[in-house]
Image 1 (cartoon, rainbow, N blue to C red):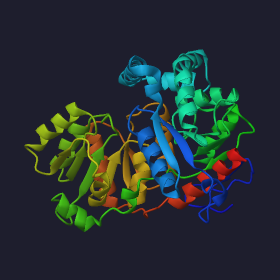
Image 2: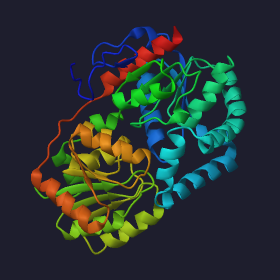
Image 3: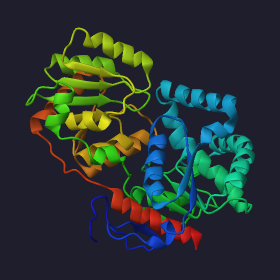
Length: 389
């Protein structure tokens, strides 16, 4: 079976992989409007939603992106985010919830899903009635569940779920969803565990255009005052800045590595990075920034968590050192990145992480820059055509 760069072509017609080539125009040409359901938990879902919207808009498609968490109401959204953060804060708790509840869909997960849909479905119905989109594309599990309920009642247009995790859990899969986009064959089989006849298409994660047009390393290094020929690492850990980022930045700088350290939306981490940078000129601290494509280009190595950032690093052509700080689905995604190659994993204490980073830099690992746009677009067109027929 031929390899397309992100997996192998399945012989099973129910699980297909999008091939690079001419996209089927039958879906996009007739698609006038789309509702994308994201979720404001971390930055990953929002980035995927924005990327898909940017791909649809030039085709003349009116795109409305809606935060699924907002459909819970302000109190419900705050409670949901607080509960998720609390699960992540206690070691082992989110792992237990993910593998024991979300994966098989046991009663705690079903209870949380029903409670969320109780608030979301009436509000989403009003949005659909007002907007009347041709299709709903859900990139957040709770949004997929709410739309599927309306679709079963005949009150929603065709629904496509796009899960960028390696193993979609039970709450991603529902009667009423017409097709699924997933990122690997294992994810396709995870969907079919719960819906054996599901229409599933495997695609690479799309990336924002800025990562496909990043400046050269020499230009980027001049912009951030990084000397040519000296080792440089981009250090970041998602929108929430999880893990010992400030400690790692200090240890890497002390070992002679220039560190571009990004705190994301974590203001406390941004303060700590500025503090350690005052005594270490090799550290360039950043809070939330839109310059990540240039920062990646300036670096020799991207140190980050598994997820969307990994696809962006591959688009720029930078090897990765992965931090095992996101439990549950994060651990599964990490294993997939290691399987794809161009990535290593490190323990999260500063000394071990620094030793691993120095080893990767010494090996001079190279990966070829990869543009996933055409393959993703082909898969998206396929599922849009199928659900609208």
